[in-house]
View 1 (spheres, rainbow, N blue to C red):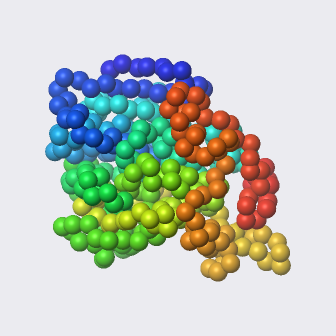
View 2: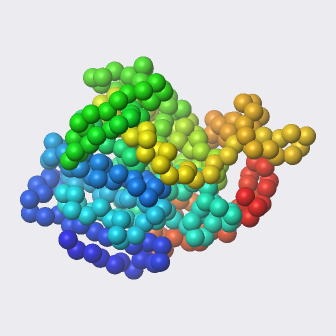
Amino acid sequence: MAEVSPKSVSGWNVILRLFQQADCVHNEQLPMNLTIAYMTARKEPKSEWFFASLGRELEANKDLPLPRIIVVDFYHSKERFPRGQGYCGEIINTNPKPCIWQGEHRLTRENWFAASNARNTALCLAPDGWIVYVDDLSVLMPGWLKAVRDAMSGGYIALGAYKKVKNLVVENGEVKSYEEFPGGIDSRWRHGDPNSPVDAAGSWMFGCSVALPVEALLTINGWPEDLCDGLSGEDYCCGIALQNAGYKFKYDLRMLTLESEEHHHIEPAFRREDWHFENGVPKIGGNGADDKSHAALNIARQSTYFQNSFGEGDIGALRQRTLMGFPFPIPSAPEHDWFTKLALKDL
């Protein structure tokens, strides 16, 4: 295993690479790159579940070029890098890019939820081709990568299924046992077909397991940071804009992940808030009608392009600079929440 420090390395970004070994026999002639982005903001993400189950999936798809894996990890350090788990392709391990909502360069008093920023970090480090997003605390079930391949060859955005389960026992990437519980099953499940993907709407898009062309995200200017960070709802808002831009979706029960329900509650979650107004004063919480989450949804329904703040240019320009080795810029705007108009320094 070799560690490489390219010119883009800074105090917030360390890139570690594992290069292919002789016993990793994969066909490098297939035309499309594949990037798998593993997203975590937990101290205990159970990354060994993901890596071991991915190894099983790659073993069953040896004619697929080895994907690039990008681990976007809020608690990133060299010691947290998942070594010795059998993967022999390229791995990039990084913090989320500098952000106004969380991390070292935040404008807020505390760390807020910023999934769009983290997902855009992976997008900026992905080569052309396809990108798949996977949440932490997850294990890939058999057939997951085959479903991703089918989406790549079929040219549709694949929406993977999930179950949150209790007492999940995973050994070497294999699920040994678990317990289902009410409310843990994917709300889209009843519409699926266990044998093949079914047509879906962009509003069905959840970020926990989704495969799509890199170009699709570039077309809409990335995940909606300015709209949804600090709030959430970025996944379905992104899907709606992608559908508006002409992209097709399929929901695939074969692209299944299981998630540990208990581990979601071990660590405190980053803050996220909906907002509404009472007598012109912003109040925390949604009201089910004219609140921030509904305002974001209405904006997404009219959008094919998100007005994100990436400094000079759009996310395509930011990605090109990043792939050339330049560090991410440190943002200083916006300084106020777009809905409440509250100063971020007070949040």
